[in-house]
Amino acid sequence: MKKNKIIYYAATGVLTLLMLFSISMYFFKHDDMVIAFTNFGYPAYIIYPYAVVKLLGLIVLWAPGLKTLKEWAYSGFFFAFILAFFAHYMIGDGEQMAAVLAFILLITSYIFYKKLN
Image (tube, rainbow, N blue to C red):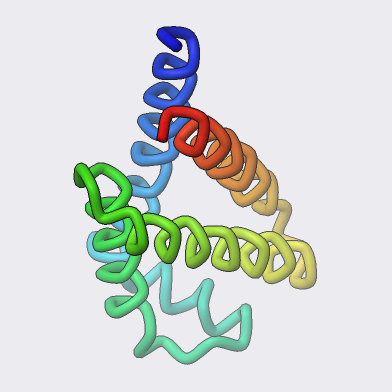
């Protein structure tokens, strides 16, 4: 049981750090993100809402209880990371490994969350 908790908190913690870095880029490097999002073919106006949704998802992952919302947050991150991987892969910018790492951390966090609950 202790090993499961350690793995869960480690995976969720590293995932949180990765996501906070991503969110900070959306807010503090907005001009660079506008260029990246337009290269992906996405409109620039979704940058701030996307950052807020990511932040809310992290809050839900760390909040005690909220089992149904946690499932939704895990699901949302799952699709976000899959789509991020393919967006980076399709434009060939070589940044898709961050999405792969986030996906692995997310799956690990989810599996051990289920084991603990």
